[in-house]
Image (cartoon, rainbow, N blue to C red; front, side):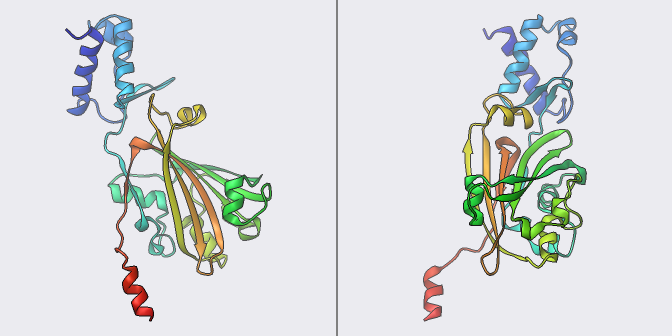
Length: 264
């Protein structure tokens, strides 16, 4: 026979899957479960820890044990950067993901700090600067409701953003259309970008900041954004909770042989 804690964990997991406990809803406190006859304090605690390890709940001080969102957000590829979204409208990238996922959003679900820092090696390489050269770091924490989904820190050359809304630390996107609209208005229209992705084990600070369950990896994103003449106007590093996103790319398949023949 399965141990009592496993039986309780399986029972709660099934209730979560049936929607009896919805995303964002707290499970009963351990004391309440004990009083309801579900087992000892140790049994309930073990069951809750098992659910957390399986990615069904998160446990944090002050919030208790809360059911996680089970349907991941779409993290769009090319489509999230469509100029019509931010140049002509007000749909910055993280909002484009929410709209595509059919999820609600609030602009203040993105918070940030802005500071002038010494360029780390990866940032210096991307911008063609000396290591330690001054760059602006715009660090954002993005949440869905109370649950963090990812961090994103964009690095800029001071001469590109000094005096613009990008260096304004107020919460939310940098005004209508966000940072890309700010760059556009300053004469730096983005033309193309390169994204690199890899999975890794989170640091202790990332685990705490993103409220990750034990064992969950993160996906690190490196994004380099260029103008048409090849000027790098942004280098960004994002850290995403792996289970909270489904990465989606829709693109035209290239035919380099046809392109070469066409140029002859």
